[in-house]
Amino acid sequence: MLVESNDKEGAEVYEMIIKQIFQDLQLSPSIKDMRVFVNPDDVVFIIAIKMDKTSEVIRLDEVSAVEFDKETNKTIITIKNEKYLPNILNKLWIEYGRENIYQPNRLLLEIDGKIDNLNEQIIFSPKDNLKKRVYDSIFRIIPEGFRVIRDLSTDDTIAIVCTDELIKEDWITKAQSFVDELAES
Image 1 (cartoon, rainbow, N blue to C red):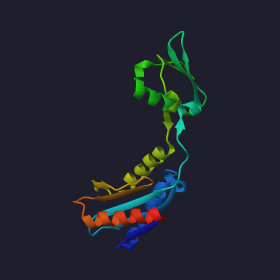
Image 2 (cartoon, helix red, strand yellow):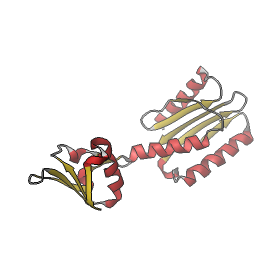
Image 3 (cartoon, rainbow, N blue to C red):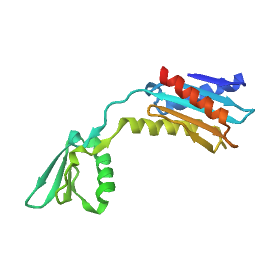
């Protein structure tokens, strides 16, 4: 982690804040590297975080058995891993409507009709989950009142420029240099 600032004490304080937030959110093992730039004179805060690789997405067929019952004309989903039940329900509710998902018991779901390609539904994406957690940490780290935000994130690097005034082009250039630097590491 590198925290740049024209205020040495401020940089040390920000490093402590970042470490504490990452510890609280248990993010440290998931972060490869980070660059931070704080300038109280220009009123700018730049942060770029490179995330570590995550495991693969979890598909419905990995955590449940899906079959079609011709007699009742229902697609039946038998849950094999209850840990993912909230994710499964959420995805199905979004896709097919909450009123169309019947749950006769804790580990059984039914949907009227035959539904193709249900096995391929992505139930959980560790990468998306990590991104959400990193963004959460960033919004805890950003100085209060810095509501003008520019997101320069790439696939595995999250980069944000924040200020309470108009964002200057050289700040965007600085953030982009952080992103490029982290891409090489």
